[in-house]
Image (tube, rainbow, N blue to C red; front, side, top):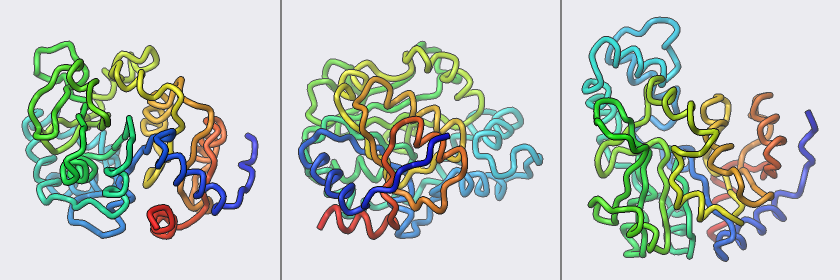
Length: 281
């Protein structure tokens, strides 16, 4: 494994701020941004697993693993219970941060939001911007062949053609609590997706079209889990060659370091709050 070459984080932050403002970079947002304000909702997979553990006794293999925990609950109490408890976990809205609101005012053609809480969609709704959303959906019990659904700014259903006309497309690959409680969460959900993600069918064609030529900026994300790495790798496939991640290098696992190196992701080695404050300044 090659060693990630250190680069002055201030230089990289300047590149990120300029690229986002120009619309040549796409933000790939994780829950770590809103987690800085310590909301009530679980803001990591481990915290979500702990929430599930507070609702029912979990076997050892599911402890600390949100996807295995959801699968255990689904197998014992059915899918409706998983959805009910996910709605409960994310019942209290998470407010957009200044960074979300800053992004909402930019001419971005694609934003990826990788958690369930929906603060980015709230920020876009506040601006009155021209945007649409596409969310990954579970296919458990819906009797449909599709992998995702499109929504307008008010949460109404859209077709892909109408969504494609929007200036900004918000992509929530794992679903979200709003507007329709779509959740990719159980192991079974992901087995279905991962069987085809290499050929890209679970990723909307409009997302694939918009990512062409874009670099990605990973903000508030961690990639210590193989599933998270797989999603990021496949969503960023066939995009630009230059990407960035805001993360403190000393906290990275070996697998994360390898992933960042393989994907040519430049590390901005700063505390997240400090980096975000400097970008929006």
